[in-house]
Image 1 (tube, rainbow over the protein chains, first blue to last red):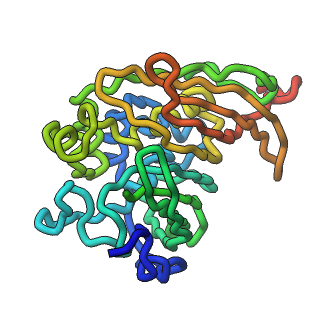
Image 2 (cartoon, rainbow over the protein chains, first blue to last red):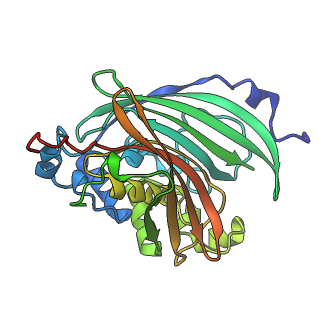
Length: 162
Length: 150
């Protein structure tokens, strides 16, 4: 037992890299996402329209990016709250997770059919005191590249664990 | 989206056309499916309320964020695009609550041949409950010079 949520074991993991993720951009997947957002932008649905505006083919909605990388998970490997699966990086942290914030630079347009890689690093762990008690702010930074090895986006995500 | 907004059309202090969304449990189901998200707090009411102490199932943070991005891309598409988005998740939303996105142009600049516009946004619900403060940069096309036949 300890009076801090942030163990030295967790602290030692700052700077660790996440095993590289790969994902192919499939129009059907990002179109389902766009419909779920009520985002009916023709750049995501009408290839001729996209090409008429100078795009190579259908454009991926920029905020779909992180979802391209999801692998399938075994249901018996999920955490009790239904999240997870084999974690990219198993940092020992309190179990209750909430989104903290994000900052993404979209460097290049991402297209249907692109093959992306994501290289992540555990950037920071900070213990903070909030309205409902102590929590740990977890920051990951991820660099996304396409099949031409061009950086298409750089994203920093924070998560609250309490 | 037929009327393309151009860099010249935008002035610091301008409002971005507002966005709204009122997520339903049906929409939240489709969003969890589309994002391969099994987190129980978004669909398992006894779990969300009884185990984690939420008042109801919780609207997905990435769905809250996606409607901010949609508000921006609806404004600048098809020839402009979202260049960066930075935000903080401050509060949760629940199904049936209206999410309102408002934005203001805070700067215009040219960088590496691109025409960039910086925007500050908020996503709110209810009586001004701040869900997400955000800043974004979009790129916009310039109007073709007079006489080019465009």
